[in-house]
Image (cartoon, rainbow, N blue to C red):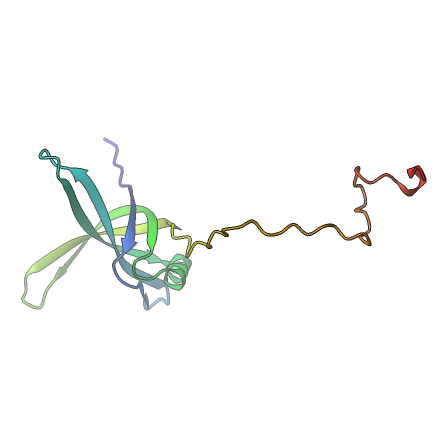
Length: 146
């Protein structure tokens, strides 16, 4: 039987990414995202649920992610589901699923430019302008009829 472990999510960062380095000096970036689901219930009322997911990426990707992302920004991540287990100070075993990020794409475009209410005024072409070489709308000097 074949196995397949692939996760694709689009969400917003819940906190600023944290960058650290392994003993081997490999960069590691950890961050969380929130993925929202909206729907109408059987009573017609709008409903919403939010799923919070921990994520981790390594290497050059980790540094790039830290450099360009911050809390609230939207990102698409692609990776695999991974189970982390550890023993707490109380001696109990704990576990948490997280996404081992393989690829990501920034989705925020930043602030959008304001739309002008009026088109910019047209500037008439200067009489002193030289014609562009290869411009078929301007006849060569030898063909000017006057």
